[in-house]
Length: 93
Image (cartoon, rainbow, N blue to C red; front, side, top):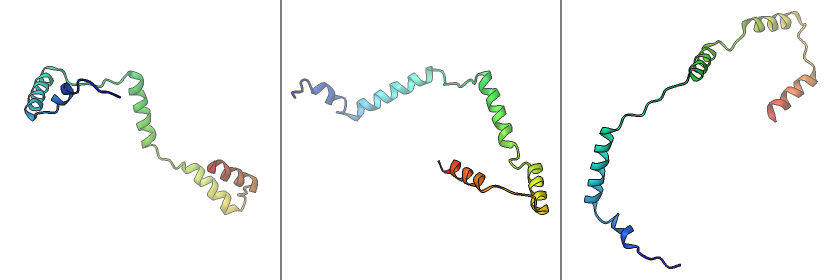
């Protein structure tokens, strides 16, 4: 492979004074431009509110805990081995 006209590319890296002047020019352009803004759609705002409510919600359903505690205390809590195996397999795969 033969590469022609390499000098223009190497001149970009030749001096730091050029880099400083390019940086100054870029800085002045930034002062004129507006800052970026983020505006959420109504749907995104609704989603954000629902997500916040879900995160604030208590994960423990006390009624279920009480129900199972009562079944265990009465000796009526019974889970089949097939249900246990299915649950283990579902969580692994």
